[in-house]
Amino acid sequence: MTCARDEGSLDHETEDAQVWASWGVDYLKYDNCFNQGRFGTPLITFQRFEAMWKAINATGRPMLYSLCNWGEDSTHAWANGISNSWRMSGDIYDYFTRPDDLCSCENAQDPMCIAPGKHCSVLNIINKLAPYADRTKPGSWADLDMLEVGNGGMTDDEYVAHFSLWAALNSPLLMGNDLRTLTASALSILNNPAVIAISQDPLAKSAIRIKRDVNVKKDEYGVGEAQIWSGKLFGGDQVVIFLNAADEDLEMKASLEEIFIRETGKAPQAQEDWEVHDLWANRMSDAVAQKIIDSPEQYATILSGIDWYNSTVIPYKEGIEKGDKRLLGKRIETLKARTMFVKTVKRHSAQMYRLRSSDRGAKKENLPSDDNHDEL
Image (cartoon, rainbow, N blue to C red; front, top):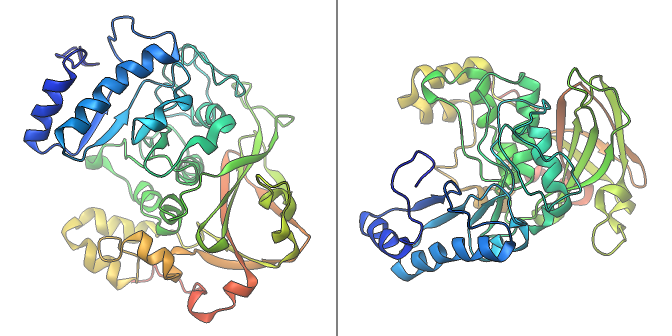
């Protein structure tokens, strides 16, 4: 059965895939409910999902295969060979840090979690992914579950942090809110081209966690920590996220060596100066977002009027490769060689930056404008 208790595809993969292909289906989310006990080892679970992968391929029709087994049986070890995306955790719910007994796995260092459950917070999910964030790759992405932006359970700052991390970790960005009740603040988060450009970066490298501090003030749930994530981008750029999940404002910092060190154990980039671009500084105003909500048929005209990036006109890959200034955020400072990157970050929030070499950033055509594009 399906999760909704309708007829399912287990042991009927070939016939179902053929029917979907005849209908012109482009996207299949293959879930894990009512699997008749066929789980418990990576091989058993792999074979169950491999059967559908083979059935889809046999149809000859390209379909996006979204594998959803909630991270059971070490999904990260085998799913990226047979799927386009793979859920690595139990179901998300609309809380930033709140723990829940239904999401029983909390140990960030335990990728062998047996019962991933549901009601998993944003922080719980990113902590689960951290030990194997590098397993995501082009054509097969770690799926952190749908976005909760706009559902009302988190603050605006928490939703910004949620969207920032999902983009930097290359998770599919699937809206999980009701479009009929979409608010202006939610739309302005979901329609931030400078952040979406990180998700769509041609290099397709997930950010990794470079620092974690759990010795911070805890919130009402007894949860609190601070993290810094960093990732490579196209053209030598770098994304950096300061995540404050503590119950107080924090000064957070990382050296250029920490930001750039990866597989080689060396960071020659630390000897350079870097232009810092704030990826949320040019966030769409609520006034503009509300105009789009009120008149959706006019969205193209509204976006054109404020010189907003429209990926329907210019795909992100093209815009990124051409250095479109609307995808770079706002340049706010220069980070000198061999120095610390220091920011004061509010409680339960994140700050997200693109670092660009000063040599590259000096090219006039690549520098972002400081103009406010929200004026009508």
